[in-house]
Length: 116
Length: 115
Image 1: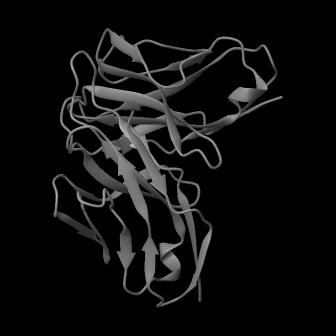
Image 2: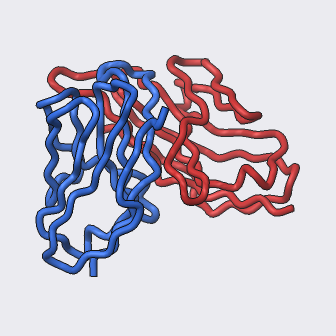
Image 3: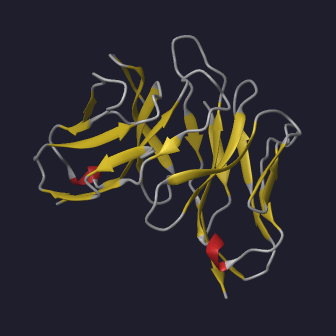
C-alpha cells in the first residue's frame, strides 16, 4: 500500500538557518504530494503541493520539488523564522481506484522549533 | 466563511461511556473524513464519506460509527469509549472525492481523554 516516510524530529534551528525536512514515498501510479503544517493548538492547513513529476510547490518561502526518480518531496526554506515553529506533515494522494475515494496518506510529522 | 468546525474542543470520558464528536462544513464539500492523530503516527483515517448517505471505513474504524444525513454534517460516534481512543480527532473536507490534487480543509480538532 501507499506509505510516506518522513524525517524524524524534533528539529531545532536558529532563526535564519536553512531548513530541510526529508520526505520519501511509496505509491502506485502517480500520486499528488502535499506538505501540511500544523501550528500549535490548530488544525492542519495546506502549505504547498505538487501534482506531477518535476513540479515545484512553493508558499511562504517554503519549496518542495516532486522527484519521481527518487520518490521524494523534500521541504526546504532558505531562512526560517520563529513563526515557522510548527509540525510539518508530508502526505500523498493516489489516483482513485475503482469503488474507493481518494485518501490522504500522512507521514508521522516533524516538529520544528525555531529559536530567536 | 466558518470553514470546518468541530465541537467540543476538549472532552474527558470514562471507559464505557459514549459520545458524539460533531463536525460541520459550510463549503458545500462532497467529501468529509475523520482522522485521529497520535504521537509519532501522523494522521490515520477512521471513516470517510463521499456524499450524503454514503460512508465507508478507513484505516482504523473499529469502535467508531459515522453517518452522513446532510452534506454539511458528519458526526463521529464513540460507542463505548476505551483508553486506546485517547487521541486528537480531526475532521476534514474537500470538494471532490475523486481528484488527486484536491486540497483537504481541516477543522481545529477535538482532544479526547478516556480515563
